[in-house]
Image (cartoon, rainbow, N blue to C red; front, side, top):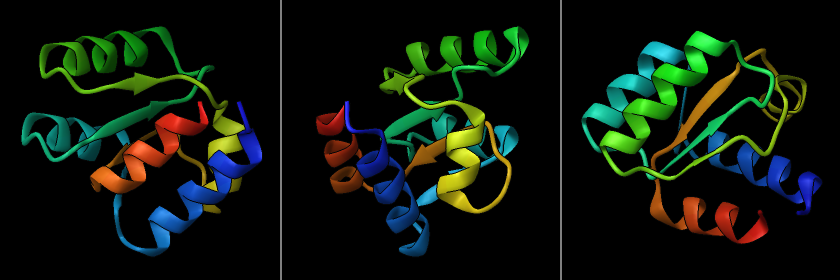
Length: 98
């Protein structure tokens, strides 16, 4: 996996307003089926991990834990543990890098 390219792509998706960040917003995007890919920090808490994993599985949205919260924060420029990619093209590109 090319972590740096993935982080760059996350930054591009954010600049293009194709990301949703933060747990409540991501859960809402999953429920609305707007999320095409969910990125959860590998070091997220157990309760958050279970909640997001269960919700993603129920709505059949791909989920990855390829990055740590530090890497996600570095890609976004602000601390976050969870992201939803809302544009299919970005989601496909990110999945291809993983």
